[in-house]
Image (cartoon, rainbow, N blue to C red; front, top):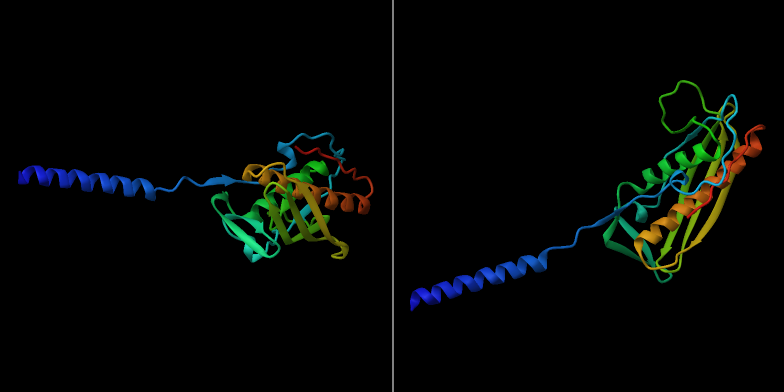
Length: 213
């Protein structure tokens, strides 16, 4: 009789332990990265000349509240939400820098667009710096990117453009995948604005345009 009670108690404890373990298991995190115009539908691109324009892009600066693995969304006017299971696949600032390099390479039709520092001895034609002032992500509504950006002549070390720009993209549903795609599109808008400025400063450079998903 005692043996039966002991066995029942053991089985009960095993069942409880299994239930606790199951309840304590979190679902795997979903990881996201931004996409460049090169992975989207490209309608047209600039024509690369005999000497394509060279551009060096400084690391993109992001606010402290965005410098984390969790995707941050807006909660009302001043509140923030940090996604528990939806995260960036790396540094958001580094991801934005890489996407800008790819986008400007496509839009300027140049293979001489690099992230700074770069392993090349000569000075670039232009330096580009970007600081993200705000990235408001509202699932099911919109993404709004506010960025301060600068284009400097590489040879003369003079500012040729200094702007603060706001870009907005609508979000069709509440999924994080759709939200991240909208963030990519705002970075695409920023890339095109920087490209247009470089094209106006350098005769012979034809800025291309790229469609977005």
